Length: 351
Image 1 (cartoon, one colour):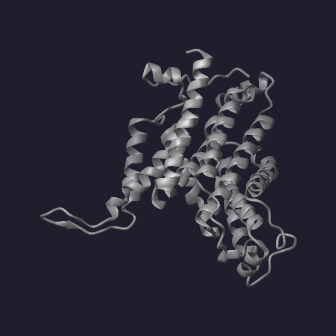
Image 2: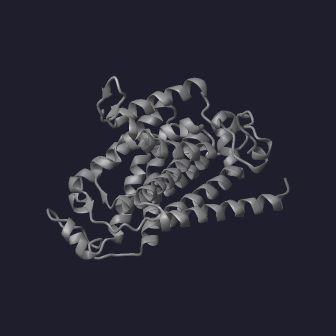
């Protein structure tokens, strides 16, 4: 397919998405708008998380820490001094955060930059190890950040959290950030840096022999992932308007891991599909928690039953599609024209 046709189809797809968002923002119920916002935020998180776990091939278990950093940074920067004074009752917020207020867009960028800064600091001990040890280090970092959020009373308001945030996240913000995240990470993966991190994923020793510096390339991917995770944290904070340390537990990381595994590790398209299915499926399965009258007998509502069903579906996917829905394949207009998913070619190891 010619490049001009592909460009035209891409523009048409973006316009179609914009039209759908316009219709939902104008005529959709608050419930449907909330699901779409959640879906967009999960897409941003899943695609950025997949960059490290899928593309780089390292088991990173601390994205909840970067989401928390971005959420608290963005929330503190957008709250008015009066709102901060009303939230921080036990201990007052430290200066100069207690008098600073910036626009929403600036706070999102600040949340991303702060998350990337923390990622840079921990990258030196993290990338000295590999395998299970790296997973343990990143998991520990996530728990340390959560505990610090709980203990730093004069910075995060401790277990009380931050309440009464302005609901500034709408469909245009959430989906706009999601589209930008997908486009930039897809371009990064298709660049020489992306081919280099794939080579590191397949065989780090061979990649090093070809002149690829594993630390430099993995660090860049790690910082990009943390940056977009921090921005997603800011969007999440201004969507639910209340944040506390209990929101950023390992369960958030586990949910992201489910998304990229079901979609296909190493596939940006798979990460998007996994996020969409998780967001929509989680709401669709609420029906199994409702009381059901089957005529001869009735089934009482069982809280948490949807997670049991969701876990069963996950097991089926893992058993019958071990590489996930997409494997390592990516969507393209040529793929849509052929009407089939190609076999995963493993990895392009050209630096």
